[in-house]
Amino acid sequence: MKYIIREIKEKDNKEIEHIIRSCLIEFGGDHEGTAWTDPNLGRFSEIYNTPENKYWVAEDTSGKLLGGVGIGKIAKLPEVCELQKMYCLPTARGTGVSHKLIETALNHAKKYYKECYLETLENMIAAQKFYEKYGFKRLEKPLIKTEHFACDVCYIKEL
Image 1 (tube, rainbow, N blue to C red):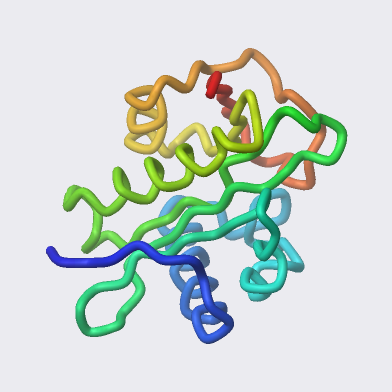
Image 2 (spheres, rainbow, N blue to C red):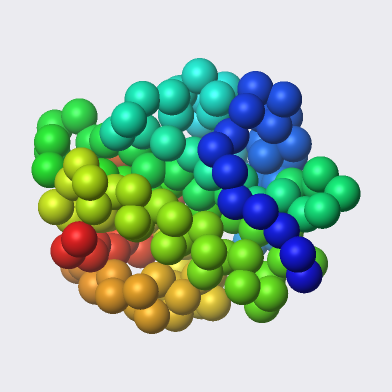
């Protein structure tokens, strides 16, 4: 599968929101306490537009988005970022797209942060194995209290 990784543009906001929502439905995450109710879900090009906060999308040769990933600062922890809203369409899974997305995000994060945190759902087993492959260590409890209180698995990685 041929694709490119690039920073999100305003025209991508609705399509990436649709990808995230379809993945949340797939894994039973379409409820309060997950990205499902995040008021910024359709505003990525506005939210992720500083050096420390970025969002990347994977786009195929026809211009269709396959997935995305973000790096965002955690207000109370200036040396820790959060890997945010990493989702890929089922057709893109197993193609290397996810690897390229996370590598892009982590390489960028190293410029600004010392650690990277993430939250996910217990039933997203493949995602957890994927994060562990990249050196994320599972935490006993959340690092901080976030609006994603339904995310029941947390990880951290030294950058």
